[in-house]
Amino acid sequence: MRGLFYKLVVFSISLALFHSCEKIEMPTKYDGSGYLKLICLWDSLGQLTPIRNGKVIITSEYGIKIVYLNEDGCVEIPNLPESIYNASVHGIHPTDKSISLIGVKKDIEVKSMGKTIDTIIASPTSGFGIVINEIYSSGPVNDIFYIFDQFIELYNPTDSIKYLDGIIVMRVSGNNEGLGPGADEGNDGDIDGITYIFKFPGNPGEKNYPIYPKQFVVIASKAIDHRKFVSTSIDLSNADWEFYNQYSPNDVDNPNVPNLINLRPDRTSDFLLALTSDIVVIATGEDIKWEDGIDINTIIDGVEYQSSPHPINKKTLDPRVDRGYVLSPPRYSGKSMQRKSPGFDTNDSSIDFEIIDKPTPGRQ
Image (cartoon, rainbow, N blue to C red; front, side, top):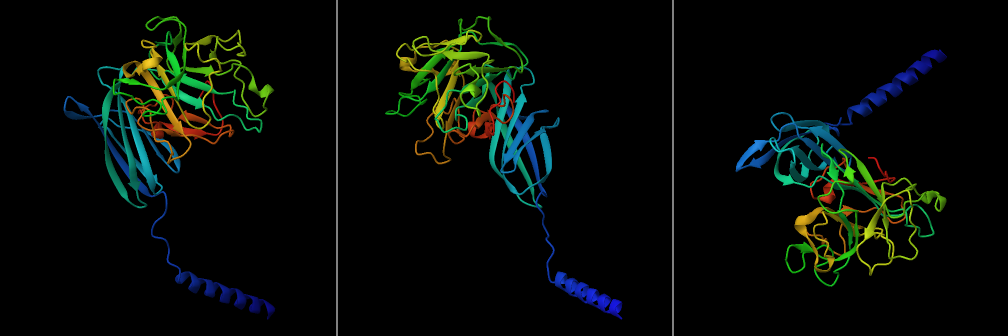
């Protein structure tokens, strides 16, 4: 009798749940059901031509996804979460491998259960072949204001050897009373506001200091093991190069690491970047007359970073060098700014870079 009672109770509960579920509408959409098709073309003498087998990076709040175009310059990406996406394409000119085909499309809306088709038009870009791949400026996690473990990382994304001879590395934070750091004051074809300018040994065109294909090169502010001073910091004692200011009475030189040399005798302090807002530029060294600005035609790469998506100070680096800016990590966070893919450069740092939890000197 007791068993029958329990069976009736279970049956009653099941029946109630069944009727309750009947009143609940099942979802007709689910996340991860969006579809995006991209058609990537480039302007070849006035005719739009497919970018064959190019690389596409798409980013959203859900992270980064790398896909590749087919022979028709198309890629189909199913199962995407509903979001706003940015997409950038990087292809190689079919007859001149030194020319990249670069295109960007922002704010592509992908809906759940929806189908989005968009087109990216790329432009040929002839670059020097070396890019700024990572900037670590925030400082490690600490409460003593330690910032001396900063570094800049260069990368050769090409399939040929490049050379660092004579290349200059600059911090651009001056010219605040004019158009701002890195702007072309006077519209005379150069960027102004150079505050620090350091130089690799040798002269432009010489071939003594190679950077090999797919090689990373780390330039340390101080090439020492910074963990000896702050446990959360990093070891840069094996950096490839270090900024050495021969005009500074206090700068320590690691004899095992070659030096970049300061070109401004009036700057007697260490090469250091602002923690959350600054500009880094590298150039061939064919123009080193920083007083009247550095010729834009000699600039290899430049990156601007700022601490806010709506900065009080507007973006100032000339858009011919960098069309956007990186949203930098908080100070003393131990985080770094790195390209989403090694060497991928659209000249728009807001797309090219991301924040990583820990710096990765010499690797991605």
